[in-house]
Image 1 (tube, rainbow, N blue to C red):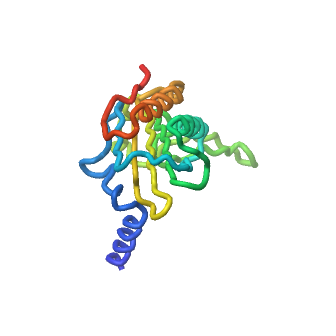
Image 2: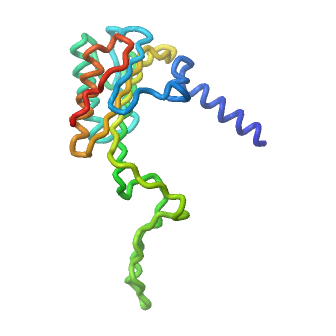
Image 3: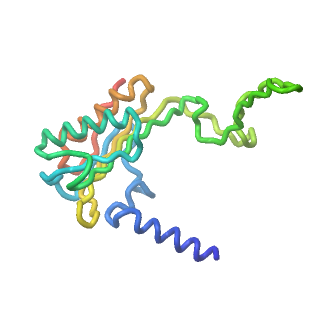
Length: 198
């Protein structure tokens, strides 16, 4: 049973990502270091319509998608939300400054002040052994990844990713800088500075 489940999981992984992009972000090809960007141009971005699709719909992601669409238009591409080749855009902002949104399960505060036998409210606490909770690193990280797929067949044509360590108040500025630095020379394979604000 365990072997069958493993086989199904591996099969799903193989079909989920095109062959040319499967190694990206794994092992020794984990992408650029923080503060840099990397472009892998398997071919130049074709001058055809491109649908820019977000993997997560947040205000920051929508604003950065708007800038990607502006830069694609400046290159001579028609852009939209459907049709043509597909550019998937992933915008991730991780607050690693020690706030309560670290990725660990939480026991939420509960209000027990109602009823005949009220108890005091308990604070929200992380669930788990205290000696295994790592110290939170300082700073926060914004990561922007773009992957262009061919409309017929799903072949990966081009990828770009960049990241910055920024406060939440500077995340928009950092994201715009990453996008602009990517499209300043989008057709060349390169690793370069992402232009992160200080």
